[in-house]
View 1 (cartoon, rainbow, N blue to C red):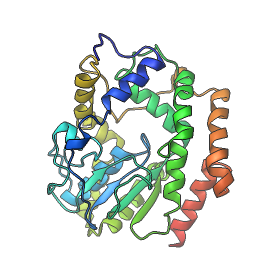
View 2: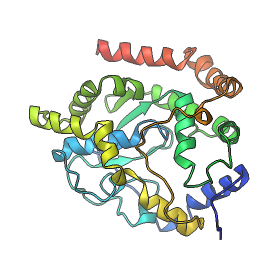
View 3: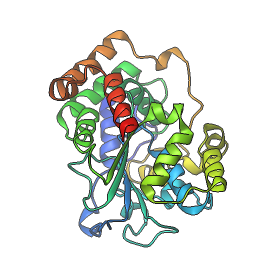
Length: 302
């Protein structure tokens, strides 16, 4: 696929994403063999994955920042082989950590799991901003078009946002699963670090706590954002989809209040209808905030 620009329509964007993440080498990929001590970080995309990678890698290494990009030390299971990483190799520290965006139904079994949820409105806006300037030209596809492009697949695929959330919620009582909410991570980062250390069976000394807390702050990660820029996957997209080099794929941003990143009421209604279908009807939670409250109540009681 040869291109001179990034996608400018949703049809082109579909092709770019399909080619970039094509499983063309799947027959050559080694079978991933998780250990019981491994931890797979598996939120839905743009729900805190990179943040969890940074916190948990810091906990197991004493705060090491000796990596080119976070994927090099906490590999993404789905693309590790494609970017030259041996998924079954030993890692720089224990426990071994891996990234995924898989639902419970699709994730490799036999490990431990950390999953963070995030409000679907914020997920869609964050995903739009992440892909803009990397896979599609800024200004060529507006936010409403982007959401409408995502909805059919989201409604059908088991790995779509709502089905992903429901699949992990069903395992909320499992000893090998830790569920968090992105919003609560923001509101109580110290508490999040402590919970993750307990789950990882890591002794949290005062020194380690202070180091990890500092290095998982937005300010620190923004100052080191080149280490969280998905460069390996970006290079893969340049080779496979022919995208122009040096695309913006930074996963840590300062945020934006620009009007073009605000969901319209009509777009929110589309997302609310999917929530009603996939979450409210089967699980009984009328809104994301209701589910978040229920998860918080469970955490407080445990």
